[in-house]
Image 1 (tube, rainbow, N blue to C red):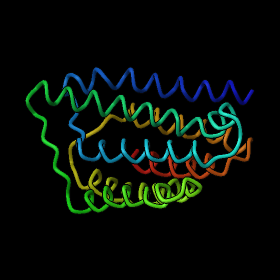
Image 2: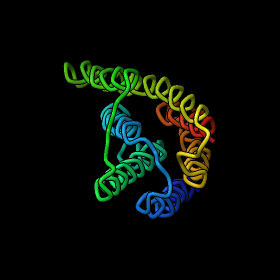
Image 3: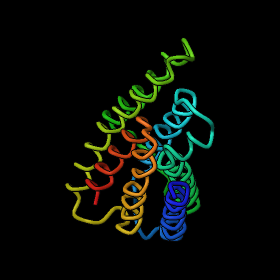
Image 4: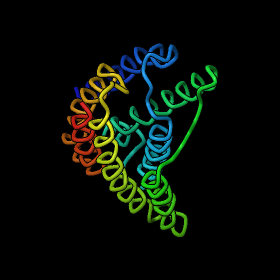
Length: 193
């Protein structure tokens, strides 16, 4: 049953992503590329450090934190489509504000313990998630300050639904990494909605 829920999480992410790609490609919404780049880097670092730190078989790791795997694939695809679509329309401008630059530097500094000793991958995972939470607060503040919609309600609803579903395998398997990731993602995507 848990494996079916894990597949459902991936299905929800794929559905949201497939819906979101044409919206991005047409330029119907204008998300900030810098925010998506930071999110992509953070989730990829988080995924790599998770798979290095977590105990168990590959299947146990995937099912126990399917949300992280699905989100990493989703954000990587979305960021690539966003950047290519902006470049194609000659609208690609990536500007990192001061806070985003600090978050970016923090994420790369989070790699230091892991690079120093591979047993420290867990430190990289936890530090990256802490930075992710801080970055989300800034993003939520920017979204609330804007009058116009800069992103898709359908897309973020699918992320929120996948986050809720992804918590089930994490909690049922007792995967602390998956539990924390699910809690962070539920609060973050819920805050953006």
